Length: 137
Picture 1: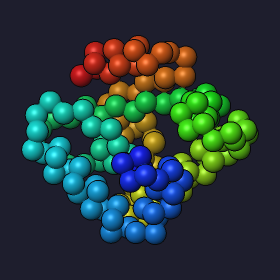
Picture 2: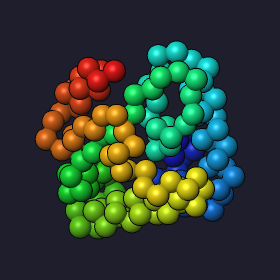
Picture 3: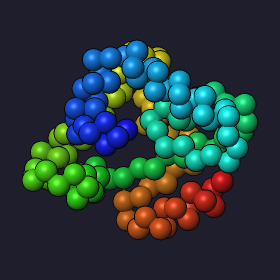
């Protein structure tokens, strides 16, 4: 969504933090779509917590923090160091935890107990992640 709006991920999250009603509207739009279509794969922080009229598999993809920072660096190409990118990722996750706790009373959206399937993506390629998600469904 950040890309759709022409924003960096940092600017997008700052916008969401400044406009909780806007974030709730996005989450509501996602929930409506989830309840109007069959066989849908939804990617989103709050997707696992949306109420749906059908059975849903909640899948959490995890990654070692350092590998996550490396992937962020490859994707965003901002010239930041691994240390700075790692710190930014940790800050973003902590900010998201606080925001979702404030908005929805969800203490930790990354707690594996909220999910049916947890896949550590640290050492496997994207096609293997996709295969494991498919097999879990």
